[in-house]
Length: 95
Image 1 (tube, one colour):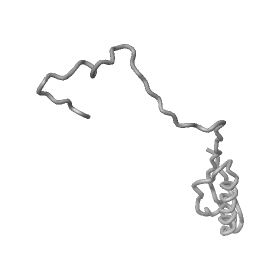
Image 2: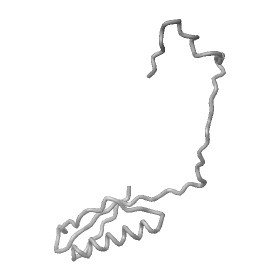
Image 3: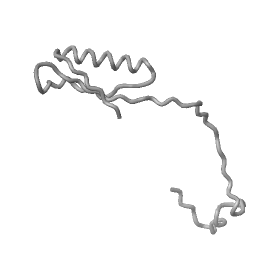
């Protein structure tokens, strides 16, 4: 996962810039930004850093269509339930 780090000498401006970048990425339809951190004080000097993760959205080459698929076994006859009918007086256990 990709990560972006924004730095600014003004912590509030770093946060506002990160929020604007998140909106711009989401509007592009190609990427989305997530998990934006609160402003973290810089290690040296004034200001702050803001981190966010960026996910690249993969476009499908063609839409996936739902379709119903039916499978039939060919390795045993299709007459009645597997193993034959239950003896009289017993009930099947349903799970």
